[in-house]
Amino acid sequence: MELYELPKIVRKRKRVGRGDASGWGTTAGRGNKGEKSRSGGAKAQYFEGGQTPIIRRLPKRGFTNIFRVEYEVVNLSRLNDICQEGDVVDVVYLNEKGVIKRGKPVKILGDGEISKKLTVKAHAFSKSAKEKIEKVGGSIEVLQ
Image (cartoon, rainbow, N blue to C red; front, side):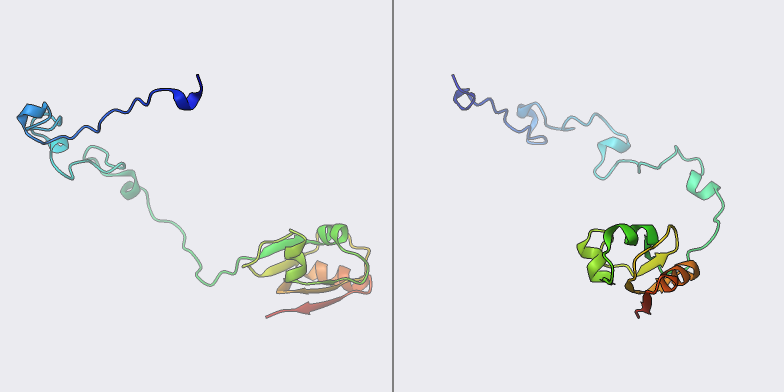
């Protein structure tokens, strides 16, 4: 006997509220009275029995800067590992190599050392990254 030859055991769906003779009439299995017996009668997950909810007891703090720019960061040590001498490193190049995901602007940070002469095009550079790239004879270009 194969798995597909087994008899299908399918239970019929319970249809509640279809008259007393069905066994699930009148209250339709919800019991008598109370909040849970009514339609739409379920407390919110965060309901705390009527006491002031924690979200209202705790003070508001801080703020969100709507002008903040989130960068995709790449360190010089990573560039040194993936690039060849004389490469032009830009957003498309980094995306193809799997270093970044597209969408966010790219910032090059100065962590690690670089020993190859590269042309790096990115949206932002840290001061140390700029110095290290130019020190080995490379050039930078800031994108808009």
